[in-house]
Length: 203
Image 1: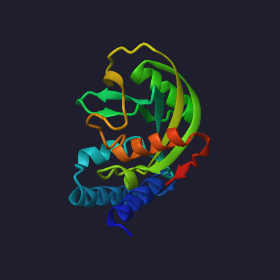
Image 2: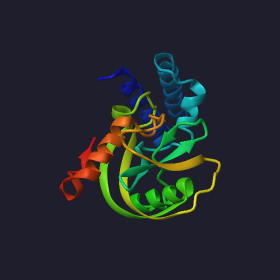
Image 3: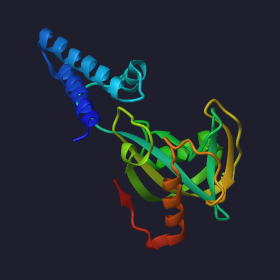
């Protein structure tokens, strides 16, 4: 098993231990397990201790994957992308709020980041972020790609995105691949072409 996966498991054990332990000394030991595991991850990856602390900030109890929804919108054979603050592009999306469903979260992110009102149509795929996107994230993240029908658009630059445009699949801009990879967009295009014949991809 990958060493980073084992270290992430140690952090998860430490978080659960702190949450469930009723003994102050056990709590200190579980907290120390987390510190050591984060130090080892930082040494073996391009992540800093500060990034690791931020990644697990607010996490407690038994650890489960985080969910990232991505809205996939087509118009005249072109796919909608939003431009991040650093100039790279991605499918509109982000963390799923605890008050939302998969589809409502995708539609919320679509509106907030691209100014697009849409209608959720179908699930295209669910992928493990660390298996399909570059770089290693200390969290286990499930990326859910929801195809949505376009209705209207009224984009305004905001704190998250500075532009929203449609691109031909064979003429994409520089992507923020940690969020949306070229392969993921290619699969979205394949699903678009396949229509009802498309089989949802998992993992």
